Image 1: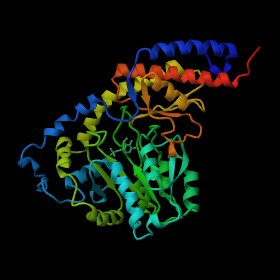
Image 2 (image 1 turned 45 degrees about the vertical axis):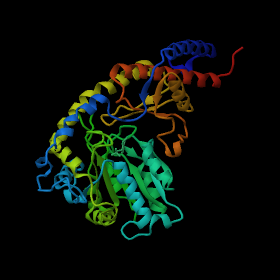
Image 3 (image 1 turned 60 degrees about the horizontal axis):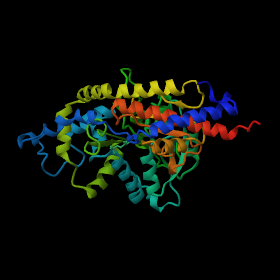
Length: 431
Ligand code: PMP
């Protein structure tokens, strides 16, 4: 098939007929495949099953520092677990607070605290007329849902190849005191799989926002989630901010959700000592302490960063062929048609796909009607509104390889069909 936009009206009609026949045949197969959410597949979950039995006696519940993990205490986590997260986030253990099972929960709570109490003595955000967050787009839908739920206005900022458009970020933060924060997934971003360059990290550290309580939410959810042997490197934001005399400007987050078990893993945040002291003060009113037994299980299972890295190699062995299959089919079916572009990430959980403008919702609908569920169109934008209706997040991890190939082949068919429908409506009818 050649470049679609060069086809005549008749050729487009003939192609539409042919694609519709293929689509109807696929639809008749009654597929039931899901590429909607970035979750580990069954085989990946199996990798961590031994974790469930590595703390199985009374003696085993005593951690290396002597804590009986069956009891209350240890608000910011087991010392060993703080050390492990410090190694993963490349910060010092005193800058880490280990939380419960979810980093999204830590992010939500961090904003909720800012709303209720303010940040380091500042006015509680809930008392302000307007609170705004900058949202690099496309981005992670659940970040946007947190803002929407808490009444925070979202301001989209375009992603570039190496991170958000920092000139715009700098300008908006500098001139508008209502801008209180920005969401970032700095490594293998959700959904594009991009890693911020050193220049972007430095530009973040050099921000001089109008709001003294402006915070960068640095969600490093995919810090060790490589799918190639060559790893992307991310410059240390806490050090960069400290070097610029602004150590308090950033909160870091991560979790083991896509290392062990999503929903039953361990999450952590890191920040300057001043921020951590502020957070600890409020947190001590909220809880007596986290689930240390789960922390201990994770600690015993991994021991150290090298243990995590060895485990992530096993994930890589499962995920890499899935990502490769998606790339291969997208290229074979859509390469050269000049209708779509997509990312080629070195890690993370997603491929970000841009269809022709105005086609994403139609593609998702066609896929769904043929039994393949994808992330809803628009989900990667604040308020679920993609202004160009073109971005779709592909999550290849859950379906087994053969099913994934079927799902992506159908996806490409739906892309072509939607594109031909769109082009057909644009071309004048020839006599
Ligand atoms: N941040 C990002 C960027 C994610 O993609 C996800 C999972 N989809 C999360 C956070 C959620 O992590 P957790 O399970 O720790 O809440």
